[in-house]
Length: 201
Image (cartoon, rainbow, N blue to C red):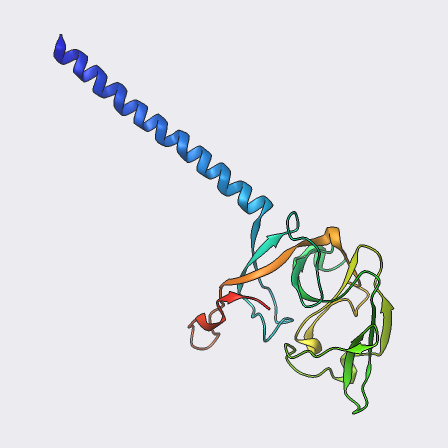
């Protein structure tokens, strides 16, 4: 009789441990889901419009639009606009925010540059200077609750300069890029440049 009670207790103890484990797993999975829905998102880079900052195939960690706060010039964001490639996510850099005036024009040396509120931007992050064929002079004031974005690879980027994208509404922004968590492999060597791992700026 005593042996049967001990076996029953051991069986109940085993079942209780399984129940506790499953119970804990449910809470852990719920917490992870909440984090990835409301705090952090993972997005892959498709294309070369953000070279040299980001490469095709990089994987990025975003601060979700739920908690990202106000965007500033220089932030790198991921947005979705249905008028461009059926809403495929795009990665671009914020050039100007609500109420600021963007002007793309020639500087005193004949180079095409970007001006915001009359100030010429120092853009050390761009891949190369804009070529006239890709940079028709323009001037636009950013609408309320919108941002003006451009790719760092200016001569090979579809961005706010073009009608298909134009200004991005804040509700179209998925999040602000924080980190490059998985750099793309080199197309020739197949090796990953882990020197590009980390904060994106």
